[in-house]
Image (cartoon, rainbow, N blue to C red; front, top):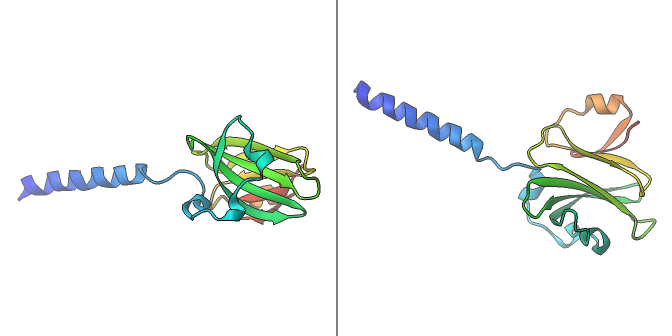
Length: 143
């Protein structure tokens, strides 16, 4: 009996470890199907460094649309901020899709600073530093 139990427990342990390794990296927003509003505006999508695809509109706030996008090999997750008040003005930045906590922070042309955080990241410290949470994954302002 012991001869059967030990190999079986070992196989279950390996299966559990491998199951944990295969969890999808990135933001949960990429788990839903894309809709028309999720497509990056042409000027932002034409950026070749890196080539962005698989975008999702996260939130619109204060005349700016904030998108999460992934690079073509999905190792990068990007935050792209597009100004509605000034067509053609956008800023973006990318970080590792495997990051935990803050993925990337951007600031520039659209007149705002923003940071993209992973799902479930505790943002109290960022809020205390002056950031304002506008979406579960996006904070704006800061110092």
